Image (cartoon, rainbow, N blue to C red):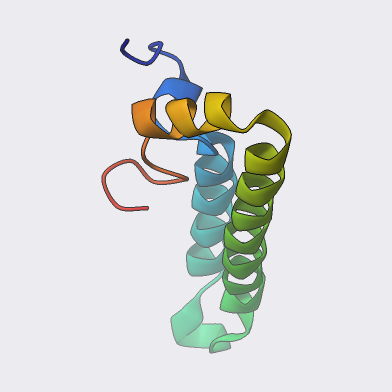
Length: 85
């Protein structure tokens, strides 16, 4: 079977990609050249937080759904960013 053409058919945590895109946009638009690295603290923190959360969710779903979740992971191999992670 092929995955459904929804965002969860492309990546298991696709909603995190939208959050990260917004956070990095805000951080970069805040002016790294004028304010240093401070504006990048939030997007960097959020990236670590959401990657860790995605990994925890994977463990919980695997324990809860077992073989069904394994099949889902085979159908949708990427966590957040299709083709990369």
